Image (cartoon, rainbow, N blue to C red; front, side):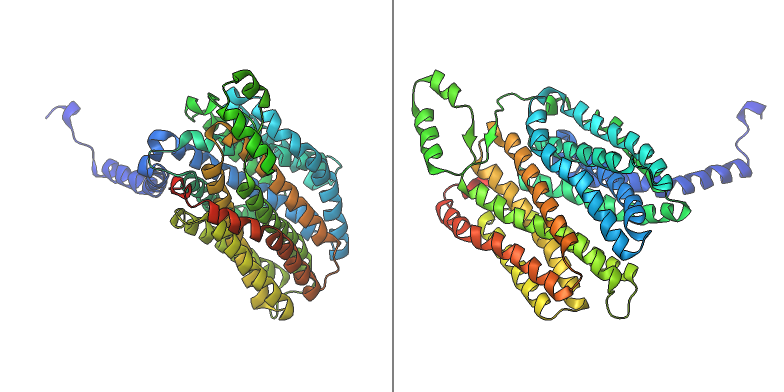
Length: 464
């Protein structure tokens, strides 16, 4: 036998087998993830790539959250931490509240550059993560403007993502089902990245931010892998978040008129009363979310749950809220054929009942249940709002309506966070305020939502 035909020796075969065994967990996991995200036509339409991109976005955001929470919140006494968080909220959230109404319309003017806009948001956060990596060690003043930049870039990504989803629907997919998949991808990535970020934090305050840099850079390249059709704006227009009947009748008359020049001059179209009522209910839940995050963070740090440390107490509430959010997202896909208005009315009513009960019988179980119910209701009501946008808003203005609704919901979260910081650390008082926030949103929208549900029977078949 010649030298060229000698078969590999036992050592070489063993090395190859060992190499395959070591690669299998990674390649097998990657193939499993790709199979899940690309199922049911999502791979062919491009939705699978958006799910993966949103997972990268969620992982990077949680890395930055871990680093900032450790710097701003856990590293100082409670009284000082409240002042630092209030300063953080004022310096970052207040300017963001002013910028938020501008972001959506600005991105609406760049419909042909959505992939570039998402990549730019990723790159901006990657570079700002490096700036923050120095600020968290030195405590320098650039911590706050860099955090504001991260927040604005994250919001810009969210607005563009909302505009992209309708362009990537597989055959037979509804918008609520597609958004459910995208949201679940982000939640799963956050669940994996959170403990990884905590592990990096143990090595030093900079390490989660270095991890965020790597994640966001990969997201920048992944943004350009989306199909070219997401940059198309054919047939799109702008939406006005208004519910006045006069505007509805005016638009109907103009649509029926033969004067096309007048139709063009009308420009903005209303999204209808069902959407605005649903947006009001969602805003109350988003306000509740911001309130609970800040209020319970300080309350449980100062007064942990019975028999638990502050970190464990915060972990219990955080896990409960995350589990509720994931469950609400999953249930949202199953309930997609039901009346969205009734779903919103029901889940908000349940949260209101749990909040009142938790305030009356304040304790560990009540706080955990409220966190879980709030997470569940926020996810399910947001998916129902998406369904209403799909049902009642014409395709030509739907992406613009998504951008503006996301902006208003973020502003509601800011208001809730500010209230949570300002309140005294009294559990019963705080949960009473939480119940009041939900009650205002529910009572002011329930009548309109139920009326819309009764009138919308003929159109509900479109929500499939």
